[in-house]
Structures are given as structure tokens and as C-alpha cells.
Length: 630
Figure 1 (cartoon, one colour):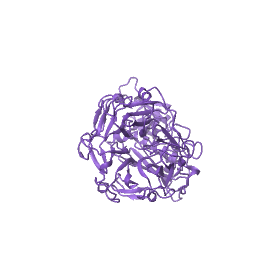
Figure 2 (cartoon, one colour):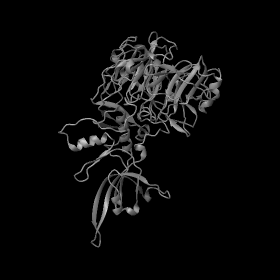
Figure 3 (cartoon, one colour):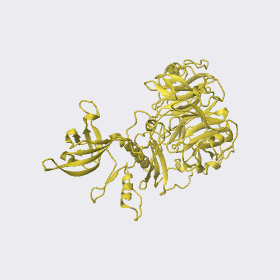
Figure 4 (tube, one colour):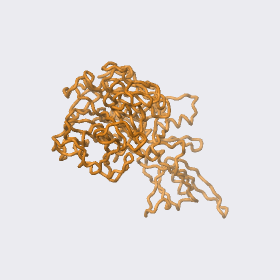
């Protein structure tokens, strides 16, 4: 079944449950298929970890009493296939590591995570195994892994310790990985909670070198406001990243969530100011309990926070255990906390009723649906709404208006023209024979525009700070005030830029919808990554083109394909030109400035591979994908 909007999934021992944010909780299914391992094992035996990808597939680690240890994939249609593990109640011994994953025996798979390409990583008895799900050999965390194979990428099987920082992760020892203790940073580095060592460690995505990023290794609860490496932590659970790349740590024994600012600038995280490289408590007051709903997360009580994760809207979900604190809490971007599932008692009763009245098992992972729909059942792709000062420069106002429709402004002569962002198939084609002289091409992004992510602010008339609707109270929405929208990033662009996060800031002063803001940010990013700009001195045939038109250009030097494949450009500027010829007779032509474009800049078709746009489609259409970088 397809995961509905505004919902999330919880493990439930031998199955899964879905929680809808209008309050209901239900069994997730039906599940089935013909996978021989799943059928031989009689279904799930004990779900220990849960993750999802941008295409709606779920990934589950399963096993019980040292038997039936398996990793499964569940399609949106509910079909279950095993990715690793063998059938039957066999002893929990690792076998076949380095070979095909489907033939490998496992010990005790638990925490699970996916990289931006969809490869699967999981904890198996204090070390991390990776499954290459691609069709060709891949380098994963510094290790070459053939297609379909499984390999160790961090720690040593059954070896516990704290050694190895500064060397290969496969030579290091880990001291127990927390539930949910694997998460990928936006640049592709893998972060691991070295639980009993009271530290968080990182494996570099390119070199496979392991290093500590938080914690001294000494149990305790100190260091807020200072460098993360100088802080004391206690028996860690999960780690997670927000869209900006800040690291969140579940400090199980101290009933708090701590955040590490991994950006280069000061950040306000759930109302708490955190300096670059520093750590701070952003949720939980250090007391075990369930009080604080409707108030600041930093003032609330928490149970033992085993797992944490973000949805596409930037809400942080916390799965807590212990009696009477087994529940799921949600922190909205503004820092307000609410209980969204669980009455504090461990169990499986309550399906069909309100999620906050149901018993739940200790949460060991989350998978999220699409974000809530806009207030209406549908919305335009773009709309312009807002106000401006009469003293504002005309050009600045017009550019802001154009940005609200993902468009641009062209001032031909004394008349300003605003063009909305859209893709119109080319009707005009030019070739080398249409040029008066040589063309000039620029194939590089300017330093000012080089980016692999777009962030900024919009002016919300409505902001779903709390998507629970009338079943829960929430603070007043910050309507008509500048508000950050969830940033948009692309993992493949980050990889192209060597793992460096490069942001482009935009101000959407005439955009009042969160969904529109992210749609525009996505278009801005895609448009900036189309790097080719061409100055084309055209003959009179160029008069058929106006600014904002799209055209095909056939240039023989841009490839050896026969017949040549055209490059699609959008006309950014036109100018009529008169030149004197050798015989003194004037010749007329058109100077064109062209910018590379294609339909994918504007068209939000469902992805064919995992993406990391953090982008939302209008309600009723297929979503593009969720936004923890990716």
C-alpha cells in the first residue's frame, strides 16, 4: 500500500503500524509476495529497524532470539523481498560477507539507513554492513563493492572497543551501535552512535576514514554551549540530520536531544542558539516523563529517546521507551512539542482508534509519507501575493514579482516584461548556417551562482506548524511574517562539488505558500545547474525569436552524433544589429543571449531514481521525494 500523506510508520514487533496525523493508528498492510525467505520465516519475527527511500519503499531489519536474522525491502504495493539473510531458524552467525547479499547469513541486524543512491547500510553486532543495490560496482565509504554484494564498511564483527580514529573504519572497533544509530550527512558521510563509548563517530564518504565528532568518551551530561568534542554524553540512541546539515543526538540516559551545529554560521535550533561546531540541548529538560506538550521542547520531559528522525517539513520525531513513557513526540520547526502516538504503555492495542490512546511497542524507527496537503484541495503552480513600499526601486520589485512565479524580467527598451517560469517546447531551430560569425559559449557557473542547495524565506499566509489539526493545540501560525522554508538540495550536485555544501539564498517576498516556495527553490536550483550560456550572432532568421522563447540549436562541434542532437536554450536577451559589409551595404542580424534549459527544470515528473529535492508537488499529484540529504 502507498503511504498516505501526513502519516508515518512504526515497527510493531512482528509487523508495522501506520499513524495518521489526524489521530488514527492502524495496521500497515497487507504485506506478502513470493519471496522464499520471507515465506519460510513465516513473516516478520521481530522488527528492529526501519527506513524508507524517496520512492516509497520500506527497509526493515528483522530477527528474534538470535534466529531469522534478515533485512527486507517492502515495495509500496506491499511486496516483501529479502535483501540479506537466510531462511529458517538458523544460528545467528555471519556468513558470506563479501559475496551476494541475498546469500549472506547475519548475526543481529538492527539500525538501518540508506545513502543518497539508495544503498542499504545496517548495524550487525557492532559493525556496519553495506549492500550495493546498484547494477554496477560502487565505492561505498571507501570500499569497492560489486553489484548486489554485501561488505563490512565500519567496525569489526563481534569486536567491541573504542580504537581506530584516524584510520580505516574497517580497522576500528565500535562499542555498540544505538537503535537508529546510523545516519547520512548531506555530503554523504556516515555518522554512527558509538553507544557505550558515549561518542558519535563519522566515516568519511570518500576515504572510509573514521573519526570522532561528538563526545569525550566519558559518560556524563556536560558541555552545552561548547565544542561537541568536549561534551560528555550518555549511552546514545539515534542520530539524525536536518535539512541544513545540523546533527541531532538522542542522549538516552539523560532523556534529552542534543544538537551539534555542523554549519559555518550561528544557528537557531528549536529556539536554542547554537554556535558553529558547538553542542546544545534542544529538547528535554533532563527529567523522565511525558509533560510539556504544547510548550517549548527544551522545557518538556522525555522518556528514553531511542530513535529520532525528520519528516519532509522539518518536524523532528522522537521515539521514547520506558514505562510510562513509551510514545512518539513531534517537535515542529518552531520548537513546540506534541505527543502524536502512544499512551505510555508498551503493547499493540488500539488499532482503529486515536494514536495517542493506543499502546505501542518501543519505537525503533520511522518512515514518513508525503507532507500534508495545502489548505485547499489543489493550488496553482505559482501565485503572487504581498505588498511593497512605494520607495522600493521598480527593478527590485519587478524581480521579486518574477521570482514568485519562477520567472525573470527583461527590460527591452523602456518597457519592462515579466515572464513566468515554464517550459514551452521549441518551435524555432537554428544551426551553424544561421550564425553571422563565431558563437561564444560559457560552460561554467559564476562563483556567485554556484550552488547545490537553495534556502530562503517566504511570507506564509498559512503554515502547517502543527499538522495534527483540531485534535491538538498549537501556537499561532506566524502568518504574514518572513519564515524559512525547508531547504532544497540535490545529492548528485553535492557529489559533483566534492561534498561541499553550497547554498543559494532567495527571498520570496510575494510567495505565501510553503509548497510554492519549495517549488520555486527547486526550479531556481535546476536552472542554475544548467551551466551553458551562449552569445549567438544570428542572421535575420533570429528575428523569429523573442526573450523567453525556447529554441533548438544544432552545433556540429558539440558532438559527433549523426544527425546532430540539438541543445535546448531559452532566449534571455535579443538585440537588433546592423553591420557594414565589405561592399559598404549594411547587413542586419540579431544578437541572442541563450541559456541552457530543458523540461526537467519545470516539470515535476515522478523520479526514476532516489532524489533529494525535499520538494512537494500539488495535492493529488505524485511527490518528488523527501528532504534529509538527502
